[in-house]
Amino acid sequence: MIYFDKVCKIYPNSVALEDITFTVEPGEFVSIVGQSGAGKTTLLKMILAEDVPTSGNLYFDSMDIHKVSKSKLPSFRRRIGSVFQDFRLLPNKTAYENIAFTMEASGRSDEEIRSDIPHVLELVGLGEKVFSFPSQLSGGERQRLAIARAIINQPDLLIVDEPTGNLDPISAAEIIEIFKKINEIGTTIILTTHNKKVIDDLGRRVLTLEKGRLIRDDKTGKYAL
Amino acid sequence: MIWINTKRIIKLGFVNFWRNGLVSVSSVLAMTITLFAIGSIYLGSNFLNSALNEVKNKVDISVAFKLDAPEEKITALKKDLLLLPEVEEVIFSSREQELFSFRERHKDNAILIGSLDEVGNPFGARLNIVAVDPNQYEKISRFINTKNDPSVGGGNIIDQVSYKKDIVDRMSKLIEASQRLGWAIALVLALLSIFAVFNTISLAIYTSREEISVMRLVGAGNPYVKGPFMIEGVIAGVIASLLSLILLYPSVIWVRDVTTGIYGGINLVSFYFTNFGQIFALLLGSGILLGLVASYWAVRRYAKI
Image 1: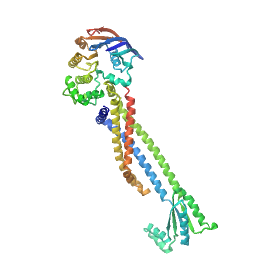
Image 2: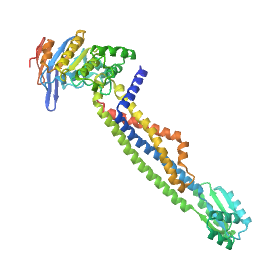
Image 3: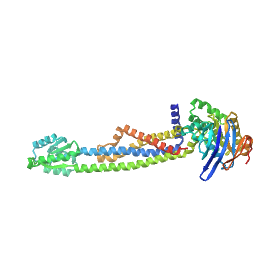
């Protein structure tokens, strides 16, 4: 589904990614670990076409991501859901509207929006917070709202960047459980984290990055750093 | 689908405008200043134009005749003058009428009226000539002088020809200069406030750039990202045009009160009401255009994510 082919990203004063090659199969749950500055976030940005490689190619199915035209970029991004450490919710919109915006942008009908949103909010445990603004939600609730927004359009791939970084251990465990369930229904997930416990509990494939290089690829890995 | 999308974008624009409270208010205020400047330019220019026309229309050539000038000669001159294509109207005022209007003008001045009673009627008859075009007064004046010159068979009946061209010319120049100056000042003011509007809206969009990047990441296309901002700009423009229209009203009342003594006749308040539709359309159009252009420009600058 995702194929990194000798991808390099060089900034004027540093090398963020160096000769990265790996494949992610449909339905996989892949974790990427590494210290700060190892290149994890840069790698995710490449998949979202937020950043372009200095050399090498990156494919989503058979499509070269960085050859997608500007006009087709929105529809490409709708195939990917994304969840970030800092949530990146729309602060002036309620929980309902944050999700509705994503659905509206992908051309879903008003009926679908009305019927799907309460359902997905219920799924992530925010059934009571439909009309709350992000500032009125706790860190764990915001992250769950971000997840609800990411999965509402049933994406092929879910990209998750440090999802537990700002959360207490209990909220973190709840969030990881939600990701497991999402993966079980067939959504491919690529997750980056610092959290050793998250990796060990998941027991899935782990890619380890160090100074921009891919140094390990363990099929049922443990946190190795 | 296009209709549903348009409806959604308009709704998002309204909701954002309402929720962005302070930013929306500052955009509206900046735009109100601009539109008020535009409205003032329009009204001021019309006011000065009508003032100039008023003055031009009041100007004529006044021919005062000698006391012993026979009335049939005056009537003959009047007929000759009316034959000239440049002349629009010739008004005859007899000695008695001149005396009467003088008495009317100075009825509060007892000394003047008293001395008038002693000397009798010192006024000769008078012809007031209105030209089709104020520029033709010189030609008419030359014609009258020829008719009065005894060496070419003239009547030698005229005491004095008052010809107010110099005053008119000076006044026209003054009004034209003040109009130019007014336009220049108003233009600078308008440019400054347009710049302020651009900056306010840019700032509003700059503070939303994180939000714009999130919109892009969830797969929102250009219409969904830029559209609501442009709708917000339009709403600000419409509200600002209404506010400036309201603000112009006390301003025209003030101008009327200050200028009635100077120009008489011209009433800016009635001009405001008779041309209300035009002024409203001008301000509304400018407001919408300003809001659209400013937000489009700012979104283009900050929405490249």
